[in-house]
Length: 221
Image (tube, rainbow, N blue to C red):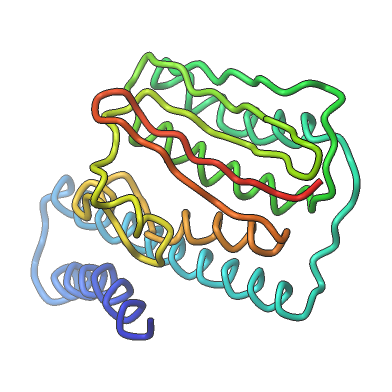
């Protein structure tokens, strides 16, 4: 894990140092070239910040889960789902995606609202970034006597079956180059998994080539 973290941090750090050194030690006088170098430094610093933020989130969730400090409240699920959807509506609009919610307003569960919202935010972020433009993304719930399943479905290109068992591992990426280009930290799905575990639940994924993927959290009621 330490080796993986070091590798992930080294990539943006090397770029920041390299382009900073270029600006400091050479006579780059072209204003457009300077702006381009500064833009690269800014983007890599954002990526570095994102990795650190996700590492802290993951650590906090794990520590609270181990100490059994995650507070669960019996409440309605739909407001939390709608809150996550609202956060991504501007991003969805840019790609002409429709966020559709299928959740009975009376559906309840024992959950930690900020954590479940964070899990949905991570899943929606992936669904929009890796899904097709001008397609629909659905958030649905399915309740049994003892569990509630919350699923996020996209209409993207799908994920090869060989990758599915490892998707929730820290820093595992199906397409490393594309993940970095869209700003992925490689920790989003791992955070989703640990949020589910903190609720005494589980995560799963189903995917079909050219048809999309469905990521699900299953938590006790």
